[in-house]
Amino acid sequence: MVENLRETRQGEVLFTDYTRGESVKKALSMERQDVLFEIKDSKLKGRGGAGFPTSTKWMLTAAAKSEEKYVVCNADEGEPGTFKDRVLLWEYPDLVFDGMIIAGYVIGAKEGILYLRGEYEYMLPSLEAYLEELRKDNLLGENICGKEGFNYDIRIHLGHGAYVCGEETALIESLEGHRGEARNRPPFPVTTGFNKKPTVVNNVETLAAVTRIVEKGGEWYKTHGTDKSTGSKLLSVSGDCEKPGVYELPWGTTISELLEKVGAKNTKAVQVGGASGVCLNKAQFDRTLGYEDVGTGGSVIIFDESRDMLKVLKNFMEFFVEESCGQCIPCRVGNTKLLEGVEMIEKGEFTFGYINKLKDLGKSMQVSSKCGLGQSSPNSFLTILENFKDEILNYANGGRNGK
Amino acid sequence: MLVAEKNALTEEIEQLVEKYGKDRSALLEILHEIQKKHRSIPDFAQQEVARLLEIHPVEVYSVISFYTFLNTEPKGRNLVRICQTISCDMKNKQAVVNAVERELGVKIGETTRDRKFTVEYTNCMGLCDQGPAMAVNERVYMKLTPEKAVEILNEVK
Image 1 (spheres, rainbow over the protein chains, first blue to last red):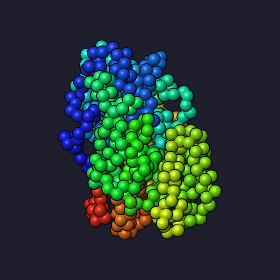
Image 2: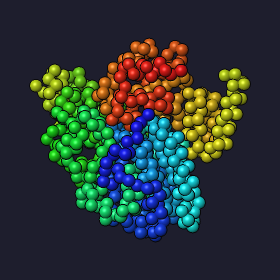
Image 3: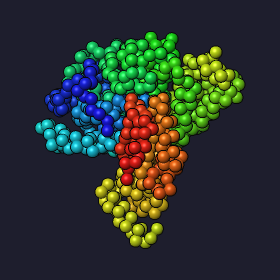
Image 4: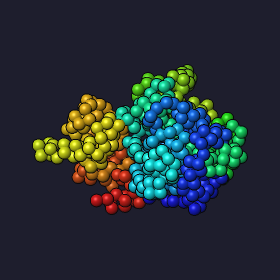
């Protein structure tokens, strides 16, 4: 089974010591709006990849009038190359669940739901046991930690192997017992979410960050990272490097600094943000990680000189063709067409005119797809074709590197 | 399906509905339990779930067909899923796949004749730093070599 490396992990914000319940008690001693203010001050943005300001999301849900509200923790990380949530839930459940309790307090929810991806079912027994401990310590249950009227509990809902359920409205559909097909937005989940009630959906890492912000303050949080991207980011590093794993680095780290840290040599390309992210070539390694430059949900896949970028692209496109839910045409048909294009290049049976048309198709998909899956799936197609043009278009001539 | 089997299945589903409730949101949890126990959700079970939750059987089928981990056709007693996504692919998952295919005498997507194993590809399992990765039922195995993968399968009952 997966190892617990908590003792050896090092980081500035998340990978540090924390005593369970501390932030919850602190939050409960504060007014709801003061907790919100602290999070607003920290400028925390959603860590799933989209980067929506967390305080805005919470404020809208808190302001929505309803008897029932829900907190949903999105642990359906299916993006190729992402495994930070696995590490957080396995080694730092205290940070994640405390964040969920704080969210429940701030928005006025009675129930929190952890949507755990089916692939992580092996974690279920330990997470259930952890929730039981929280109930014993009165961090869950009725009148939590003596706070009159704050009743809140958390349950775990298991996913069933659908990548698209990481999209928040698809996730809510799945929670309600439907196919995981994204909804039209608006209305947004903050007013019309689970069971049509106001719902906050946050990434695992976002909630863990909230716990630290409440503990140490928004001012402290802002001392990490950059102006527009405050705090730290967990990066799941895999591929051609000596030390793959999860790293906590402040926003604003450059790609080359990261490569050095993980012991990557002869690097040709770095895929940032998983299959739906962008592929950078050597000339772009001085770019920085952050919402203002290369934003990411945390996946970093490293390719060295020996790798064949067309094969990489084909792997990504096969992934999207399989995982597209099929309800909207740009995504369902578009991804298939892009994969066909990749196969044409592989065989050398393509025209430049057609490839350019496919690029246009990719751009159309980015604006016309219904949810984030189709809007981001052409990213790797477009960036690999752009950044590795010579290698790709000369593929069939035997010259893998355009020679 | 024998009448006795049908009755047993109905009783089982009634108990599940009692446990999880009649609300639509209980559907996936109920299906998950059936899947886990029987390794598939047969037609009759779909009809019974639909009847008890008061929804159309097509609704149940449409949900099952959407999710990778739910299926209507019975698979082998043990489900072997090998990660095909890029990071595991780069760590030579193909060698593992070849060894497993040779050893079990089936191709990816097939079930062995004794119905002991079904072998499938799966997308990213979140073990990219420890590839190649494979899951046998709920258990995951990492940093596989062809030998290690075969050894693991030999230990499965």
